[in-house]
Structure formats: C-alpha cells, structure tokens
Amino acid sequence: MPVEAFNKFESRDLLAEALSDRIAELLDLDFASGAFASIALSGGSTPKGVLDRLGSKLGANREMIYFAMVDERNVPPDDDRSNEKMIRNHLGLQQHPSSEFLSLYVDKQDAAGAAEIAHEKLLADEELPFDVVTLGMGTDGHTASFFPGGDNLKAATDPGTQKLFMPMLAPGAEEPRITLTLPPIATAKNLFLHIEGDQKLAVFEEALKDGPADDMPIRHILRHPDVKLQVYWAG
Ligand code: 6PG
Image (cartoon, rainbow, N blue to C red; front, top):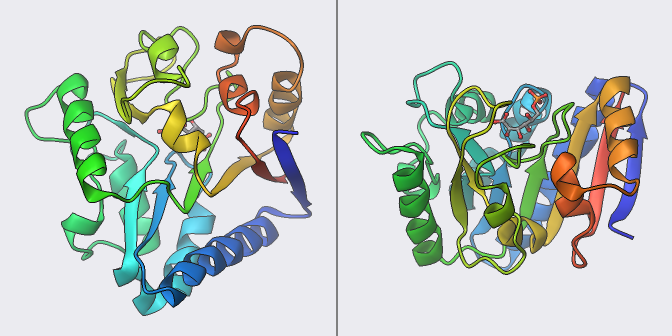
C-alpha cells in the first residue's frame, strides 16, 4: 500500500503539534550520527502552523540541517508569493546561511534556467535521499508543482528521469514554477502529505481510485512502487 498511515486529528493545532514533533524527531536521529539531516519542504499556506512549531523544536540543531524546497514560484524571495520567504519566516530561518538552504529562485533566470542550476547544486551537495519530504495538495489534485495540464508534467513524473528539478508552466499555477521531479520525492526516507479540510479529503479519496494519473497528478506519487506515504489530515 502506498499509504502507510492515515493520521486524522481533531484539530489543525493538534496536527501541527504532532507533525512537527515527528519531523523534529526524525531529523534528530540524523544529528545523532553526526551527519547533516536533509529536508525538502512544500510551500503554500497549509504548512505554516507546522513550520512555526518545527522552528522552535529544532533549536540549535538547525545548523545541522540541509533545507530544500519541493517547489517554488519563480518570484524573488522578497515577494509575498515566494515559498522561500514563507518557509524562512515561519521556521525562523531568516539568518540561516544560504549554503544550507537550497534556493530555487535565481536572479535573472527563467524557471528553466533556475531548475537546471538547482539540479546541479543538489547533485553536488550530495544530500539525497532526503531524510524528510513534506507534500501538500491542491483541490485540483496537484502536488509539488505537478499540475494537471502542466507543460512538463510527463517529464517531471517520469520515474526514470535523471533530472532532480524541472520547470513547470500550468493553467492552474499563477506563475512559472520550479519543482522537484518524482524520483527525489519518491525516494525520501520519510514522505509526508499534509492536507486539511473536507474538500481536500474528498479529493484525496478520489485520487486513490482508478483514473488517469495526469488528471490528478498526486496519483503519480500514490502509484509509485517505492512510496510509503504518511498522511496527516485535520478537518
Ligand atoms: C505551492 C506548493 C503546492 C502546495 C499546494 C497546496 O507552491 O503552492 O508547494 O504544491 O503544497 O498548492 O497549497 P495550499 O496549502 O496553499 O492549499
């Protein structure tokens, strides 16, 4: 089963407490071995409560973490649509050395150029597989920037692609995106999906049914043979 556990919570606060505890615990296991732990975080609005709590739980250990992002909107990091801005603000990482935070926005680069630079950087940094990857989901069934109708959806969800990041243009995305491809997400040691509300629960249940994966691209994750997904949901 691709869904290893479906964790339901009475409230979004309880979910945020539990998920931030779990992520901090997993990253701690790596500190114990003296290695850098690595995490790729999703943006959007849902993760804010988890990131607020995670930031304080990591404490000084944050210096031993390699932070990456699952996807980014191709906007400068001071733009309110920037996932990097949201993640840094909520984790309390404004001062974190840039070498340990893999930015996906590159000044004067389009999404294709930025994706290529991020691919090379992540390869060189040798932080794969990620210890933790967190995913969100849109009500159109997208996850990461695997959007229905995305121009690079086929390529980015090809389980055999050698690319770690790709650009994505899609009708449902406001701006060009840069996204992790399927392999670095599917090979994460711990993969979490964090969704909230009845509407997203219904979309997720629909995604578990048969039907074209490209119509609800989260199915590319759900149908990957190596994926063991931990779902966290609150109404
Ligand atoms: C982004 C994402 C994206 C997100 C979903 C859910 O940049 O938007 O990383 O994949 O996880 O769109 O977003 P919400 O949490 O805002 O509903």
